[in-house]
Amino acid sequence: MGNPIASSRFRFPPGGDDPDFPVPELPVPGVPFPGRPPSPGRPDPGPVPPTRVWLDPSGGWQDRLFERLLERRIVLASGLLDEAAATRLSAQLLTLDAEGDGPIRLELQNLRSELPAALTLMGVLDVVRAEIQVFAGGDTGGPSLGLLASCPRRLAYPNASFTLSEPRMRFSGTATAVSAHERQARRMVDSLVYRIAEATGREADDIREDMRHGRVLTVAEAIGYGLIHDRATKPA
Image (cartoon, rainbow, N blue to C red; front, side, top):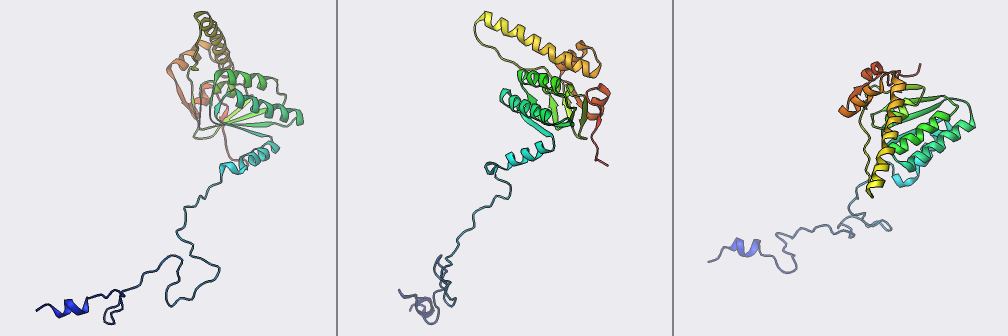
């Protein structure tokens, strides 16, 4: 004889309407649960998508931020400085110089630069009449040190670092063209070395030697080296 419990209590008819053991009902998205009144005009929202809490880079906030900085005569340079970025930065500096005689604050944040772009901006800094106060943050190295050395007042944030390294350049073409590029590159490197040597009061050969070894300076070492004047502090 079969088990009466197995044959009656746990036997589910097709409709699931066993009075002793009803089949539980599961909620269906979009369908109101039994006993809950429907909400007209308010469908089930479904799963909540992930939300971005930071600002959208395509929202134009960077342009508005840079405009507000320029109104306060602050110019920000960060990332890689190529020819296009050097052109924009030069235009900002020349515009501020033409608009007033007040000092200009130049922020260098983790700046890396191509050698031609650095030399272009160094030439602009030489002719700007307004006083340039440069603040270095993050790691500043390579040709971007020429920008730092071209400013009469040089400060650094407490955790900044400075890397003396040789510029990297690549040439292609015929042997004559490569040779001409190499001569031009040597003159460009000489301009960078002499500018750093003039700012620090050191011999050019010492600068070249430190660049060959990739010497890294902390803020305190950079002050002793003559690369910067002082550490940035909170305004009174």
